[in-house]
Image (cartoon, rainbow over all chains, first blue to last red; front, side, top):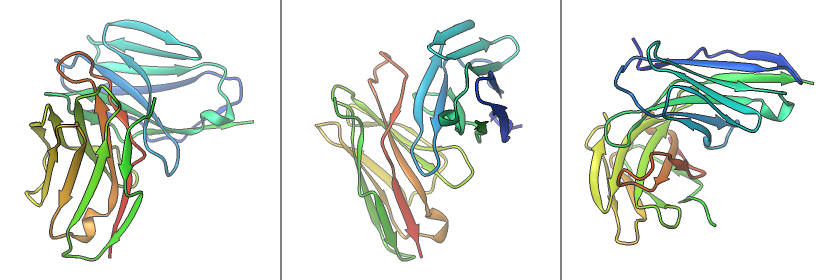
Length: 110
Length: 114
């Protein structure tokens, strides 16, 4: 079992829709969770982090964490074509090591 | 404020050669981590340095080494390059010391080994 799992996609949504990206993790002791956005040929950009159970909202982005079920999700409201990218889920391991999933490719069509 | 900077942007090396990659963290950040990302995969952790000391090492061979300088910049060295070392090498900066776990990536160095 991989430490952090994501559906590779692509996830296709029409412009203006809600995109829902999911991630599960295996280490029940994990406390810190991150979402990065990566455009093709570029480096990952931190867009959300969440440390407590529940929802955290920032603009069009909402991160949801459920530690009991060991999943974290990212909702993107009013999706735009510029949101088309690969979204990486990361979980903090020992010291400050981040363990990444393989990413979900999101395609937003006009 | 300037973000994380890395140099060089691109690099082409031959098998068996050695390479040094450089990183400057965000001002005020004392922790630097290095990651390797191959196409289609998420970044893989190589090293973390905080206050000039190695705090963590990933599952990479001893050909990989790193260090952090008094100004918190860092270098990653890879010896005896293999074709499989071709990847995007990412440096991430964070406050460190338990004050913040958020890591911010630089633009990366794309290494091609021929």
